[in-house]
Length: 271
Image (cartoon, rainbow, N blue to C red; front, side):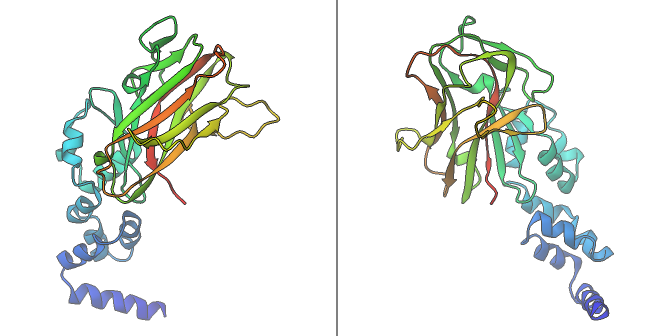
């Protein structure tokens, strides 16, 4: 069977020009292209070609990279395959340092994070309540550290037109705590993910810092930060408007402090 399979592969590479093989591979997925590249030298050449990986990159990738605060020479200095995986492993900072952009490796779908500087934070411009500071493990120059509040209100807003179409996204708060913390171990905050002006009232109650005998919903990201899922949104055609990812807690006037927020991330949800 292996000999027949190999013979069939040889027949295909003889019968079809490399350009045709590349066109066929470009209709698959990044994962399939990587697998096909080990079939034979001809398949490797076709699967690694710029024409294949150009198809896997978002159609507006040049515009996105040109909006980056980093070196936009990535477009010309890397092959399209190398650029694809660079964007998977190294989020680029865009929108004057307020957002980051990356690709989901297996699908090439767009991932965005709104950094602390781009969030809408109640009392966020008052140093007695929140301060912007820097941490070496953050992808953004500044993170937001909560000092002292009686209620909590943090929002990220992202236009649905910049997201990948026909994609189910999940929103995540990316955070950590300093040693001196108070208020999040006992009282949950509410989260909502909805289109601006169309809040359907669906909420999740999230305990960011549960005690040891309680279930922990947050996950270690492996980069020095924690994340907790806030909710989901299916982006059908990208014409819904402004997506709001909200965290709040108004009731009870409980003083809170010690939380550090890197941002709110929106990425395709697997499974």
